[in-house]
Image 1 (spheres, helix red, strand yellow):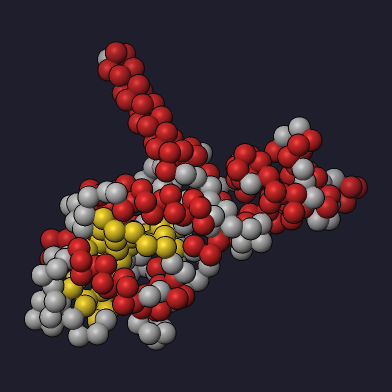
Image 2 (cartoon, rainbow, N blue to C red):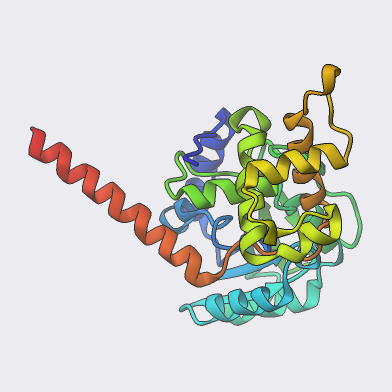
Length: 301
């Protein structure tokens, strides 16, 4: 699924990050969705943040597969100048997070030289909830369950020696790896006008069949051992949940909405849609496809 969803405020965010980096940032704190840590990482940030030290926060860990979360933490912590932690945004452990940031920027230790953090991430990853928790429960930013709630950069003081810059959620202009696009759509990072929910649901069923067949069985009584394909399973879900139109026609759109909503709410269990190895393979394939297309264009010219 090649998604292109880059509203106007995201262009402004990109420029704001560029400007902020010029003014000086010590650590880039990037919130990721623990259900798809690779897909929810913004490759554009590496260009914009000039390879500054990075703290990767895998939010919504309570919805993610603990074993796969451990794999992702090990993956990120093995990267240079990078630390990673898993958390739930509402319970953000401020002391532990600040300690990790100070380890990455050890010279920023006083009010005269405050630690300067850039908080960033994709839409609907939980940044606003996270920042409100950091500020001790004080409602510092607006929150919501739709992508794109925060529209402008905010500057906040945490204590007397830490300055936080909060940026609106930002995707990148084109998500090349189809699997990453599906995962972002399923997780809620992409606006509804940029996706076909029935197609997203079918792809989600295939992911569940491969990695978490027990989730379909436990929640909907759908067995992955029947040999049914994703479309047939979605039709069975529609019947079981009464998603039926006049004349007995199945409402596949409604069934898709039910599945996606219940996945996002964690009602199917703790699920992570990708491993580091899988995401690496998807990214490599996408890069190869781009290079092949470029070579074909050159040959035609």
